[in-house]
Image 1 (cartoon, helix red, strand yellow):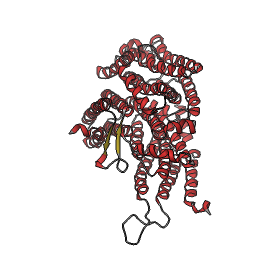
Image 2 (cartoon, each protein chain N blue to C red; image 1 turned 90 degrees about the horizontal axis):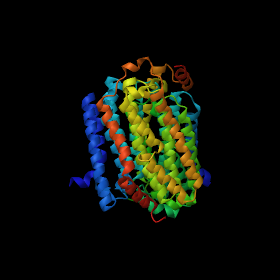
Image 3 (cartoon, rainbow over the protein chains, first blue to last red; image 1 turned 60 degrees about the horizontal axis):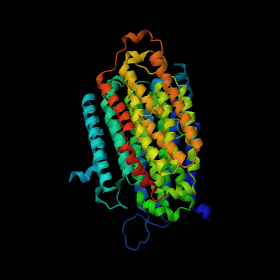
Image 4 (cartoon, rainbow over the protein chains, first blue to last red; image 1 turned 180 degrees about the vertical axis):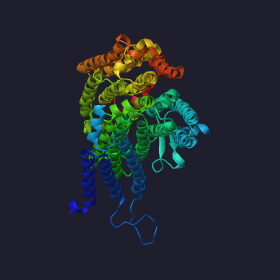
Length: 117
Length: 493
């Protein structure tokens, strides 16, 4: 069936929604970063799916092979993965410093301390 | 010839200066390096603008790879103008930054500020100069990651949570843009902007392209702090070090507005964006709501930097309003306001930086009677504030004038009226600062407060002079903005 034949796109959408939901719904800063990671991973899968051709192989010239996957989206997403790692590292570093300054990584407790001061 | 390599040097010089600042590991030395790199970037962008105005758009093939395959840097009137805004604001604020940053950032972290500053500058310049949509994403992330770092370097612990919130929102925005780019690549097989513009019309009735448009609009809107996606901005501006707030106020959201223009007008085309998708019908009410809500909220702020942050959201509303009119005059007004708002808001933040340097706070109560203790600083603030309101002979008047003319061209009298009423709101929040600074009863500490040092005052007054100069002599700004608007709108009248 056409709908399930493209199941990887369904995976993308489900992961994207889970990730966004975690970012919005959770008050814990680390969990927010986890959500952000899931959200970004869904986009990585989207890019990889775009480049993949049914029955295509890696784009290396070999005799007898006629269909190749498109390497460009795969290369692009390598860049985006690096960006994702940098974002996660920076986010975690900020969480560590927030914990040092407030003694908590729960959003509502931090808010309370800010309101009190 | 070196002059043919200018487009690459524009980005590469700050990009190399960043890590070098890190290696220098010395506050003054890295400030010196970053300042020279910033001024060099300004001269390069002036040379580029001159070249574009004289001979038309420049196309630069990075690494010698021809356009649709390799990355192309393409500079026409609008991005030459945006490059000038970014590098100009950066050059002046970084000259201001030395004393201010040493005062507001922990001594051991000062060199990190200039590292982040240079990376942020190269990211912003890169977004404006590139003709490749994936390259836009990469530069966007370079500038965003360094801006999260810059905000978090403040001594105020609230800056950490502000930076974290900005990181979450900014990453969602950038990932939305990434999704939009993926969907466009899926349908067209290209990442080059002019190539995309040529290929989109043949697939523009597919749902994929329409969804790509939606994702890009939301993503760029988040980055531009377009109402109602502005929640990250006020805290980020309020708690960052003063010089950093000044830099962001003049550059970060401006680049996002440039992206908005680039995507809607050049890549998707006027017909698709505004006739098929009817984007103007969403932008116009959102812009008006942004102007009125943010201006009203600004009136009730006690922290003046936060107040200016809300005011920035309102000013973004004016730019979006100009875009949503979809006429040459409207887009001219938007581009003009990009430049003019960068000048006035940076001037105001820099003046507040002087206040913070002496007073150590910018809340309303601590500013009582400061107008007499710091006459030059507050004089600059008053002139900048008048420019924000839109008094004649300042740049603020020029952009409002074009906006109102654009509204009247389309017989929208009510819109012109609303723009005028919203200016009164700006007058109210500016007046509230003037009132406390000149008519408030000075506190106990007021006798200790002196005028800010000349190293801070000179850059402030350069910006204020620019506010007045470009409010009187508009031949450069209006000329460039009109040409850019005509180029963006193409044959549409």
